[in-house]
Amino acid sequence: KSLPYKIIEQASSRNALGRGKCMFPNRLSVYMHDTNNKKLFSRDYRAYSHGCIRLEKPLKLLGHVSSFYTKQSFDQVGTILKNKKTGYVNLQQKIPVHIVYLTAYVENGVVNFFNDVYGFDKMQKLNIPTTMVETKKN
Image 1: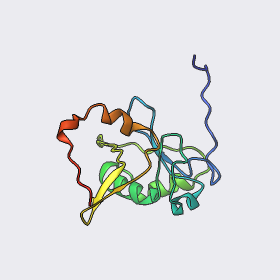
Image 2 (image 1 turned 180 degrees about the vertical axis):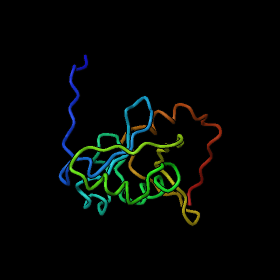
Image 3 (image 1 turned 90 degrees about the horizontal axis):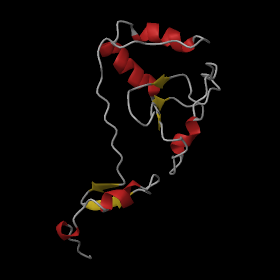
Image 4 (image 1 turned 90 degrees about the vertical axis):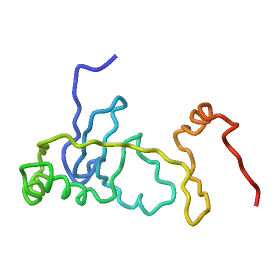
């Protein structure tokens, strides 16, 4: 049951979402956001969010978005960020956002694995025919 209230944390440098967030439509209510805890990016394990996407360089993303998708300049958007009140940047057109969750990658011919913090690999295994997978021991 949902509450008939909307709770918004005041904009500040101590806000858990940092100085801003980027909303995009999706069924899981995931969004991208800055952080007030930049030291988390230096850690090997970084799944400290509740499923949202913590941005290491939000100003770089904001610069790109403001240059190509808004009527506002990067400086105007920066003024919104410095303000102590919640502000909005409206896009002139939709930007497709594709979220890809990978737990393995190949580098120099070697397969590397990440911890599957969301448990998605187990679900994906059920969809892969085992006859198509061939492995060799070195």
